[in-house]
Amino acid sequence: MKKLLRLFIHFLIVVALIGIGYFGMNELKASKPQIKRRMPSKPTPVVRTIRVEPKTQPIIVRREGTVRPLKEINVIPQVGGKVIYVSPNLVNGGEFKRGDLLLRIDPTDYKLALTLAEAKVKDSESKLRLAEEEAAAAREEWKLIHGRSGTLKKPPPLVAREPQLAAARARLDADRADLRKAGLNLERTRLKTPFNGRVSQESVDVGQYVTPGQPLASIYSTDAVEIMVPLEERDLQWIDVPGFTKGDGPGSKAAVRADLGGRELRWEGQVVRAEGKIDERTRMINVVVRVMDPFVKRPPLVPGLFVKVDLEGKTLQDAAVIPRSSLREDKTVWVVDAGGRLRFRRVEVARFHGNTVLVRSGLKRGDLLVTSTLQAVTDGMVVRAADPQGRLIRTAGGGRQGPPSTDQVIATIGARLKLTDQQMMEVRPILLEHIREQDSVRRRFGGKGFSGIQKLASNMQKLNARTKKRLQGVLSPEQLSEYETYLEEQRQKRRSSFGPPG
Image (cartoon, rainbow, N blue to C red; front, side, top):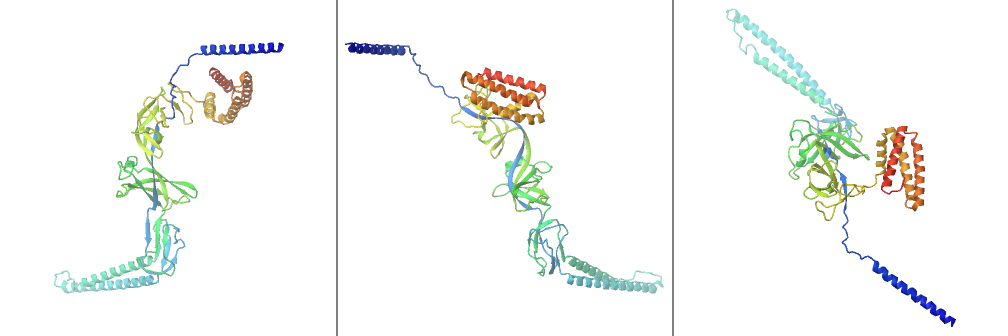
C-alpha cells in the first residue's frame, strides 16, 4: 500500500513539473520580440591607394644599341716588297699608340732608287750650270759684236741659248721630283699608325711579299666610340639632337650601361648627330651617341658590345609618376576625395616608361590615387582607402587609420625630442627593443580579465622604467621629460579608445 502511494506521489510531481515547464515555455515564446526583416547592408569596398607627390621629373629615354668605332681603317701599303719586320702588337686585339711602327718592308731597292735619284739631280745641276755659262758667254759675244755699231739690242732667244737653258732647268726639276718620290717610297716602307687604336684583324707576317693596295690589317681608334640609337618620332620632343632638333646647343647627355665581368659598368656620352636617313623599314630615327675614352675603364667599352643607353632629356615641373596599372581607359584615373568617395579624373600623360606613367597635369599633391581594381565602379561611390601595406587611411567620410609602423613611431619620437643624428643612432635600437617587448607583453596579458589588466599595467610600468633608465645616458633631462610627456599622451589615447594600458 505504501509503495503504491509513493509511486502515485512521484507521478504527480512529474506531471506538475512537466506542466510548469510547458507553461513557462509558452510564456517565453509570448514575450519574445518579433524579428523584423531587413535587407543586409552592402559592405563598403576597400581600395589600395598611394599618395601623389608631384615634383620635377627628368625625362629619361631608355634605348639599346651596338657600339661601333669612331674611326676604322685598313692598313694598306703604298709600295711593294718583302716584309722584314712585324710589330708584336700587330695581332688581333693588339693595342698601339699614334706613330708606332706596325711593319717594315725591305727598303734595299728603295735606298738604291734614292741614290740613283740623287745622282741624277747632281748631273742635272751640273748641266744646268753649264747651260747657264754657255748662255752668258753667248750674251757677252752678242754685246761685243753689236755694241760697236752703237745699237744695243736684246739677243734673240736662240743666240742667248734660252731654250737649252729652260730644258736644263726642267730636267733638274724632274730629277728633283724623282728624288722626292724615291724618298717617299723609302719612307713608305715603314707603316706607322695614324692614331691610338687596336687591331681588329691582321693577315701579314715576316717574309711575306706584299703589293701596293693589298689589305694587311684592320685597325680602329680607341679615342672614342659611337652608338647608334634608334628613336621614335615622339621621343625627339624630349631629346636635343644637334642639326636635327631646334636650338644650337650641344646634344643631350647619355649614360651608357653594359654588363661586363659580372658587374654593371657605366660610361658618360653625348648625342652628337642624327644619321642622314630615316630607316625605311622601322620608320625610326637613328641618333648617334659618342663616348670619349672608352678604354680608360677595365673592362673597356669595346666595339660590337650590346649596351643600354639612357638619354637624359628635358625636365617637367610638378609632374607625377604613377603605376601604369592605375591608368584607366581614356586616360582616366581614380582618386579618393576627402569625403571617402571615389572620383574619376582625366589626366594628361606625358610619357609611358616601363611599368610607370609620367603625368604632366591632372593630379595634385596629396591626392589618394587608387591602384587596385573594382569589378563595378561608379563616380562618387563610397570606398575605404588603404595604404600600400593595407592599413586603412582616415578620411572625412569614414574609415579608420591603421596603426603606425615601427619606423613611423621612432621617427615621431625623434622629431618630438629633436634628436641629433648621433642620438638617433643610439636611441633607435633601444626603442626597437622597447616596442618588441611592449608587443610581447600585450599579447601575453591583454584581454584576460581584470587580473590580466593589472598584470599588463604592472609589466608595462616595469618596461617603461627600464627603457627610461637606458635612455638617461643618451638624452638630456629636457628630452627625458618630453619623452615622459609623450608616453603619457599615448596612454591617454589608449584609454580614450578603450585600449589596454601601457
